[in-house]
Length: 147
Image (cartoon, rainbow, N blue to C red):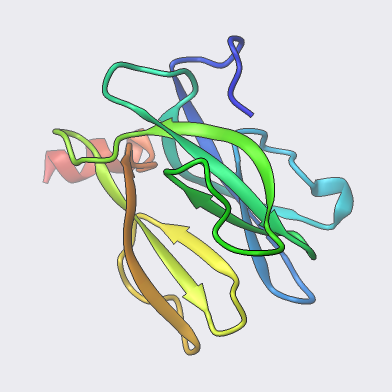
């Protein structure tokens, strides 16, 4: 949950769990690790506080913990529970932002990525969900600019 103690730009971590395979995204790097979630690293950076150009990104989840993010404060369907504002992002592309794509599996799991390639068989690209800042490590970015 975003609160006043978050920095303006905050990392959003991707976590993964098995049985069934599912993804979670949180500004807390240890979210769910005691319940079997494994942190995979920073997926992207988002606003930790509301900004003039930003909109809230709401978290909804269905049991067993299948998160989905929406730009509207409305459940995606029956059986989804409200989890609050996860972070803030742009709903239109601005300079220096990247698209975050939503993918949906056949069994209604969701995955989010700044890479628009379908993650594998059984996944469908739902399109751009919101825009945020990339998670390219500074050393890799400096190296690519030097080339």
